[in-house]
Length: 215
Image (cartoon, rainbow, N blue to C red; front, side, top):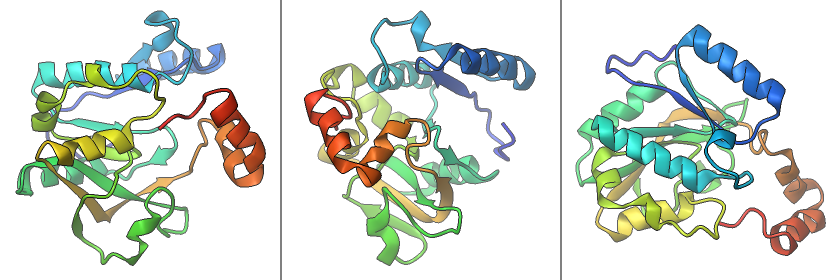
């Protein structure tokens, strides 16, 4: 809400079955700061994660406004100029931009997951065919109009890898902005996924036996 972006923008928080206490706090803050909250428990009975539904709702809203869509996941901290930088690149990059992502770093400004492959890239703007994450990513209005998110596979949990590859498949160019850096605290919103690093057997049991975390 404190972003230094000159263009008009609206902020929507999608609450994916948070505890009642957190949902109530989001409502209180939305009245205080003027953002919109969508409680998915009011929209669907499907259990979390509901990323497919969120993407579909966000796409519909962005297209109705003729706007780009910037996704900021809840384990990411942006700077005041992050949104304005992504918006500026959306208007200045050639080659039909589809997705434009800010690189993620830890609290010491070292590039971290999921962009470890970018550690050897010089600072700047990088056109890439590698997968982008939705940690902090702009999806251009042109791309949103070209691919309907209702076609996303409902059997999956996450779609950033698929959508970033789909963008290049249908003729768009994706970009990673290594000079625009956001702090990523992986999986802080879903602590069980930290088992991947501390108790991998438990993590993969949940992933494959219980069918969670499908990419």
